[in-house]
Image (cartoon, rainbow, N blue to C red; front, side, top):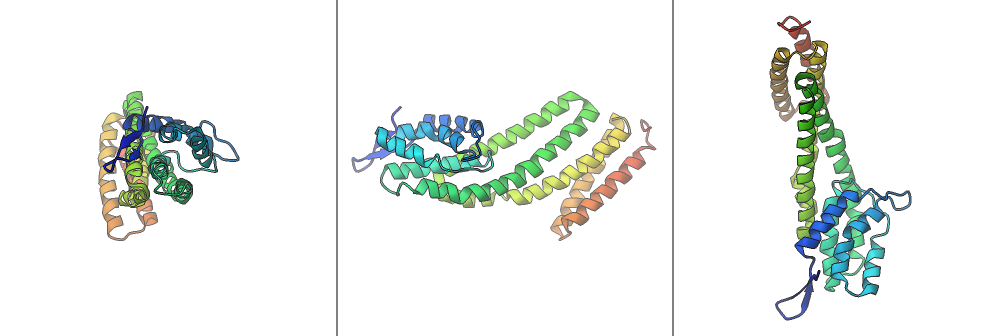
Length: 266
């Protein structure tokens, strides 16, 4: 599939087509399939970007050189790596057109892999995934296995949407992807998700204590919602996360004990 089109001045302008970019994005799901101690995710990254390199460099020697520069050490969060992958294509296009030196894609990857790994770990692994894990646990206690399937589905819908968005922004904006990711305020969202997780765990503990009674679950859910709103207000007013967490724990415990007196309690 050709990736060459004629520019306005009649000179070839090398770009990666949308179809090839889709192939690259789909391959990114195998980023860690060939994880190794020496290069970590380097083989997966090179495998993912290979269709773009094939399109940009018809000359075999240039294509080998391009592949070699993506076989160096690479390790980042597998979801956030979508932004780096899109940006690497952006820079490879500029290298192919002679607008940047061949080292530019490597510098881009080296600069972003660490910071995006930290952001991804903090948001996905310690906030979003635990939140939906707690939601699935509570749902299973109150409504059975369909709630678990629903929680997993919503989690994956969110993470896929973010991966697609970051890949597109990385490709279109290159280095400017840093500002786009900063505008998403993922660390702030993560703090709120952790608070929500604490609320859900408290409600799940109450539901478990009461045998998962649905009428009690409705009351507990109302208390959880009110507590979450109050927690958000407290955070905005300057309360520390630790203070809010202890407050949530206290309210959740009190709600569970109070629910023992409701019909359906044990």
